[in-house]
Length: 268
Length: 295
Image (cartoon, rainbow over all chains, first blue to last red; front, side):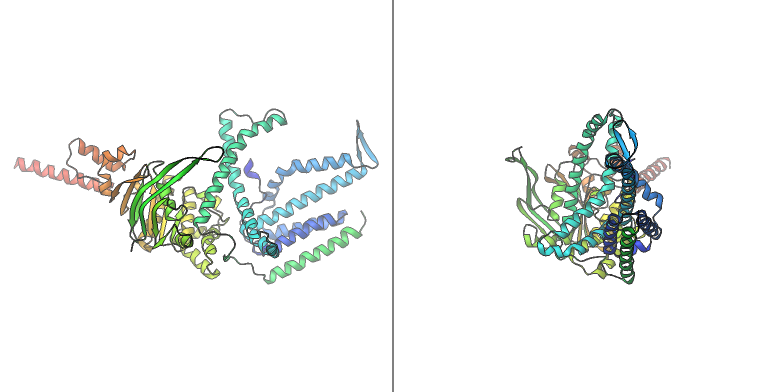
């Protein structure tokens, strides 16, 4: 069940989006997120959804694979939607006991749901089409001006990519520990929230120990392969902008302009 | 010139109590002296806690000796300035394949070492291709390491070391977590590197079957090298190995038991083929003996 989380995973296939420079994809994702918060009406969301659909088609990543990852965040989304639904002041539409659902609340909740869905799919599309190494390289290159301010850009980027690489491994490990404990009579499913949380403690302790052990091993393996930070490193896949990358930048900024115009100026 | 030279090497692990004060020291390796000529295949045997992994980490300068010296390719590992040369010269493959693969794609992982060394981009690609072909994993270069089997992951790790063009590869129980097929593949890859490319291999293991092709076997116990010699010499001393809590290859054990119960077999039989040949020889000698009596 834990293996179904696809957030932050890479999907191996050949497509334009896979070949694109990771810097473009990072900037595009950022622009996309900004556009989602700039946009204020449903036409804007429609444009955002259409843009995302186009990207998904271009990425060759099966839509079902993406949706599987969404399930894990459903709870968070529900939480945000319900909060917005009940706590927005305005003209009440339905009253249940002391709670009231207002017209403004419905509108806001709907917008929030759309916004979150698009945001999550949009950002997972980036990780699905970019290997962590590329992602790191892109981040490192985009943030490299910060090196002058003594920000350890390379180190942070490396930590990020390692964290991403170990997500599936640690999930697998969690699954294994869980099964081992269920086999010995542990109960993760019954009881209230507090009891469930307590049942997680014996799961987390071995998981943390295993993670530290792995980290230690990995550090040693990296040192054994001459890793000594970003100084003097060359790149196997250096980042070079090609024509398609410039075109992609163009498309993204046209999209941003369009979403500002449509999403801000049209009513509703 | 020898590629590895350990001279009266000792190493202590320091134990700390809960406040971080030194509680005492455990001697993991004690007074070890040995040398390895270029192109050799060396196996280090020993049960858990015998100090073999600690010794291996000295060859890669991950640890530096408390006493004595370790010289790799003419460079003393204790000198700070030599560390990176030593690590490039003597690559290391560890036990758990998951904990030593850094890249999310096979080829990126193999390129990690050369990237660290500052090799130019085109040459990295060339090295990655060569290394993956040498271990038979070129077809998987675009795959995610998570989807490979244990033996395949371990061969990718070997390719990752190979791409750094080392003179020597230290393998610290590379097959301990693998199934029998994966083990065979990894050992085959290691032997091929040794024979075809002439790379010195130091294989640490507790599977006896993997040791029989080595040029020299070192047996360690409680931090000391207690036996040293060709596999045939080592495995002819079945009783001594049992004392050290080590197994001998099944065939050797069978030959030993047959010998003990009266068959005139030679010492230190290592392979099935050898045993069958010896048994056939005995059989025909017996037949001739019978024939002689009749005639």
